[in-house]
Image (cartoon, rainbow, N blue to C red):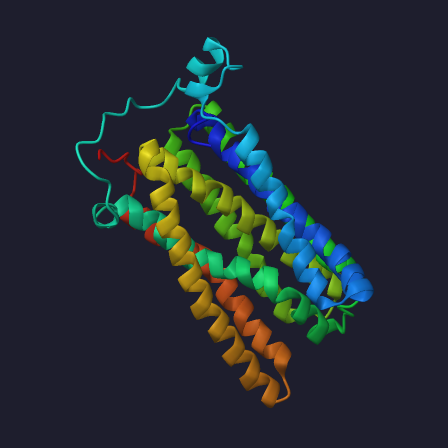
Length: 303
């Protein structure tokens, strides 16, 4: 995205590509039960896992950077680089230690650490939640899950569009990104209402809004890396943030398991999910506040 899009279009581009995983999440609750019924659980893993090789082949044979893409016109090339800072050659290696001394790096790490675990929860625990709370049969195609994950596609593209639209309206890039992140964080909060209702479709609506906001956040949190770092550092910073998100996921998954074990033993597992939703609803706002404290204006770094 940093190589092929100017800053004013990157968040929307990220939102579009990020919606691809959400399309898969929508197809999954329909496709996997059929594979499970016809071929068993082992083939469900093998078939879905092997699909990634299709992407690999397309990437190897199709992708190229703009400078080496023969079909790209000069006008298009100039537009891609219309708002990029000119990068100076590196005087030395780009180490993780150097990146970790920068507040901008920790801005992304914090954004991923506090919010990636919530996405893991939405992705992996929602089927169990609907089964425990509403007796949803997970061996059959699940309309509630399809609706929820459809919200993620809308959120991905909508969140990316919001910050890109604000930039086109004249907002500074950092303000547009922060406003989009704040709107996303606030939109996750209504998930707290799920503890006060037993209406499954109201719960589906609230969770759909929250997962849409989660993906709107994702579209913008990825994009701030290319806003603050030169292209040669983008993948390293994203890698560090991805690791932080995975560590957060390990910790939160362990916490979820502990909470659900405790409340299942007491015969009130729904209350356990209510506590988890409380964490989900507040984590994005906490992350936004720390991000704002670390980098108030998201100044670009000079490496």
